Image (tube, rainbow, N blue to C red; front, side, top):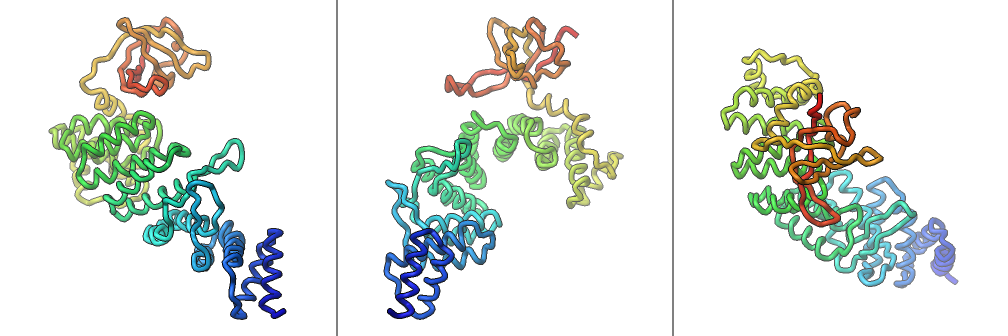
Length: 397
């Protein structure tokens, strides 16, 4: 028996008992001696490479080198109907995710081109009762569409996101929202503002994150519907999620709109908020803005944007509810966990979350007279839009 045959026998034996490192060593020795691998050996060699060089490796160059070897000796298995483990697919997906994390989007797409999405599995993986992992098909589309969006390939982003929404039957962690959001962003960049708004409204039913409101505000701004833009910008600014400094460009947007509408003082307040955040974070600031704010006698050394936010908060509240009259009613029910309740007003009952009660929580009980605004909300159980009570104040004080 030749040395090549000896090494191949040992490699197969080690692979069978899942000693992948030892198996890989003997396959490499066989290849160094110009040994030929059968297709069965190539598949085993690919698995050895995956487990030793790809699966838990954190070094991008080593992973890519191993992945190149894998795709040269193995092929992508069709896992669309039966979830078959495939070192080719697992290695490419792993590399795509790492390149996404490192913002190397052309490399993401280079490796994405080596996969046929029609052969990818929709089966999600549950390592334990609490955790569910994305399917390979979901991961493929998540990385691909992010990369396409980041390099401004908006038409292709829309196409791939739509493919994902059609071909993935069940989404993990509401990932369908990310595909819809990328479609909305792409439509906005293409100047298709109404289409973008339609997708954002659908997303907003179940996901009221501040950046959804930001994107709505930007769409309406480009449509020159400035009142709607202000309302959505104020929603984003006042949203409970997101850091104030993350919303810095919203303050600039509001300032620009108010300047267009002729509200000089309020425009300057928002531009100053934008300035103070950038000053606190030591981000670049345009000299023209500095000169403008200086002409109003504002403190250009100020970095306390959190205090400034509290000082200006009522301005954004008035923008958010512009054109709406406050409602008056009585708290009808507060549930035991004190997280939500109902208000009766004008013969109707309105749901509210207790964090919307802005006065002392000692007054948060049944029978308290209150005033409030109404806000559109999505009732998931009834699959319909409803009005909820928000910005609630006690009227008994």
